[in-house]
Length: 419
Ligand SMILES: Cc1cc2nc3c(=O)[nH]c(=O)nc-3n(C[C@H](O)[C@H](O)[C@H](O)COP(=O)(O)OP(=O)(O)OC[C@H]3O[C@@H](n4cnc5c(N)ncnc54)[C@H](O)[C@@H]3O)c2cc1C
Image 1 (cartoon, rainbow, N blue to C red):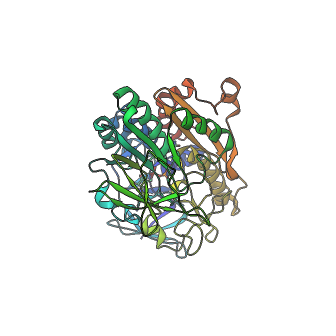
Image 2: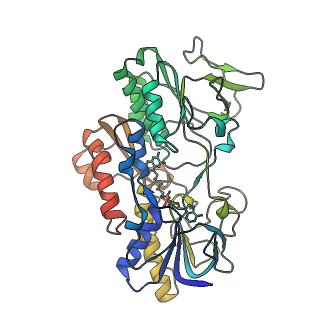
Image 3: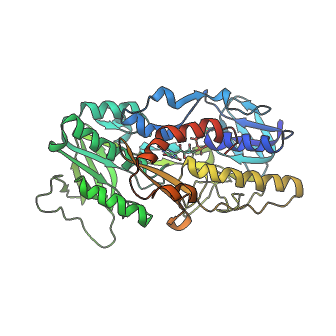
């Protein structure tokens, strides 16, 4: 069995950033990264790809160029983890033992959780920036009017704001393409409000009203009939039943089995998402109850609750905040500091993650609200940026940051362990 001092599972945003920072701090560390993909994608730009304002090809780079110097790339898939035995199995490269493990394989799409979705996904008028943003752009360009439905599932998803960002962009695009007058743009969500942090919700509610967007909370997508172009929702508001408004433009109907049926002429959705199966089946995931299947880490130290030599970060970690690359940027230094302290002193460090995450809410082709927050939905806007602009309002400067600044920072600083 091959052994590593530090074994990292996943060479995506979190795995690469952590490896790069570790190596910068101590080049003598013996590190292996298990990662099967040749390409790494800057997923945050997929929102812009879906709206035709960023090239998909520009979101991809070769993985090999981002594996830090001196780190072994095990080009394979992890298939099994035993926290108890400190081992990881892979598809083709055999088994590994480790002194310390960093778990960062992200999450997987789970369309099978909505009947009818696997058949419908990325075909015809059904699209998702999560799986094929180029198809989203095709759908927007071919759209001739009718119901444009935007929705999201009840499971945790990465970048919780992405399902509504593409809606704001589409709404503006439909005005340009001349179909807006004959279109109902609707955002139908199992959520109770448009956004969890009040300052940003205020701006978004105003936008929704001004742009005549239909907002329907408490509706969870449960079934899709791609052929008939119908999506069914369950009304999940406690102790209430759904009543369509009189003369509702959306034309929704309540079915005999008490579901809300909506016809769509285009549908964008975030598919349900889950921890990868090998994580769910391992002893490092939460076995029962809330957070089942995700990696069981302390929400501040990011150290595993039961296996002290294991850390997790990124989308796979069970953390009560938004799963984003921005969150990873604040998580990686915590893992690095706590892990290095553990190696040196046998005691975990005291670095603590505050739950920081950010959602660049693109609200149009040249506008953006930069929502930054931490645990408990507390606003946590960058003090320096806030000196110059109110990031809770739509700003052109923030759009420039999204389109040019953040991708530059990502490839050149974050993945190099410099930011
Ligand atoms: C449409 C969209 C819009 C987004 N917008 C934003 C945004 O505006 N801002 C923002 O900050 N974030 C955004 N995100 C989220 C952001 O991209 C993720 O939160 C971030 O990439 C998470 O990093 P990660 O390392 O956990 O996962 P990833 O970056 O997805 O990396 C996981 C890696 O693990 C590898 N892997 C998977 N299975 C295995 C296995 N069995 N063995 C070994 N390796 C494995 C994968 O190949 C992958 O390389 C967006 C995402 C999407 C899809």
